[in-house]
Amino acid sequence: MKRAMMKKRRYAGILFLLFVLSPFGLTGAKTSQAETIDDLKQTISQMKATMELLQQKVAELEEKQTAAAETVADSNSSNGGALIVPKDTSIKLYGYAKLDTIYTDKDGGGKNSYVPSAVPLDSEADTLASNALTMHAKQSRLGIFTSTPTDYGQLNTRIETDFYGSGGNEAFSNSYGIRLRRAYGELGNLLIGQEWSTFIDLASYPETIDFGGPAGSLFIRQAQIRWTQPYSFGSLQFALENPESVYQSKDELAPTAGSGEYLPDLIVRANFDTALGHFSLAGLGRQIIVDSGLYEDESYGGAISATASLPLFDKDKMVMQFNYGNALGRYMEAEFADAFINPATHNIETSDQWGGLVSYQHFWTNSLRSTLVYSYAERDNDLDVVSDTADSIYQSVHANLLWSPVSQVNIGLEYIYATREIENGEDGDINRVQLGFQYSF
Image 1: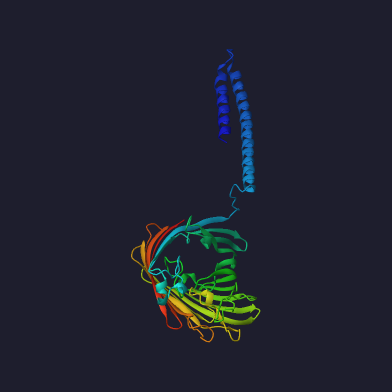
Image 2: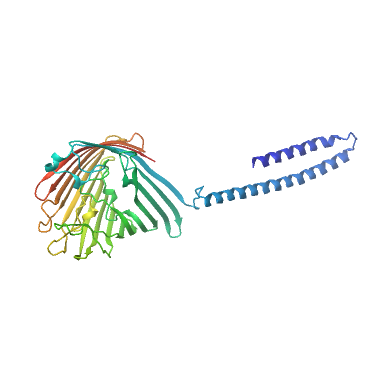
């Protein structure tokens, strides 16, 4: 384009010189005034014709350059050498790098994050190391989000991963296996794919440095089909989600996982956004089934969850969760078994479970904040079905201080105290300090 413009200016300059010099008779012959005027008219006419020709050549050159650029782009696209974004589609790349440094007074409670069932009992203390330190970057996250307007509403897609997958080691490279967190498409009100369960209200999650989360909180992502109907007060959500059952029994031969589920988990949630805060109420219905030769039975269970997020002074807020049912099981961070298998009858038996949390977040300054969380989870064990060493109660406390020198950076220190009690009354606890560095983009 620049070369064409330079040629255009060069031709215009030559014509200008011809225009200036021609009236003064470069041939040396003297002409009359009339002849001079005629020559000027003829020169101007020639100049117009030449300019029109130049403009045509420039237009042809620009057209050829555009066609060449499109050819190169098509070639790169077919070879995977260029990112071609569809018209009207926006793409967002997001995520963060995070380092966690964790010190625990006993070797237990979960190595990379708090796991309620892994808290050691006092009777096990003599067999465990008295201190444990680990550093890892597994929580680092990478996601891609796209959005495209359509005649049926906004079309959104998301794929998100972290590094809590299997594989890797700490002996050589500290490599970690990549893991799928979320992968879904959403057109208007309809979402299909893997996402946080509809049974979970993300607004009721407290901010913790620990990745595991409080013992009695809900925590699960899974494949689902979800419809969200917005209203002036909030929204109603309906979902069919992936079924899976986990069992516990005195009988060592009894299966620990379900098989043969043919009905999806059914979830309904109502979200309310009011002047007082955000509130949510959810219901869950599940088929729990086992079909493995000797053990063949099915049962049905359910659960409810009530949550609240209440804004307080300035930026402070309080969040609460209460979860109850006879089929909470894998939906809660406590990860109690979904049901028992009776060793005598080989039938499925459900049990009441409940859990929840209360959390308060205070902002000391705009960039400095603290969160205090207390959480509780309990299961009603049937000792005719399970032994008296079955876990019955988990409790946890998280207290932290986080500093954000810039909005994309979180640096924080967190103290975790957690207890575990089994049915016969034995218990144990851990004290943990966790330091986290998170850099988002």
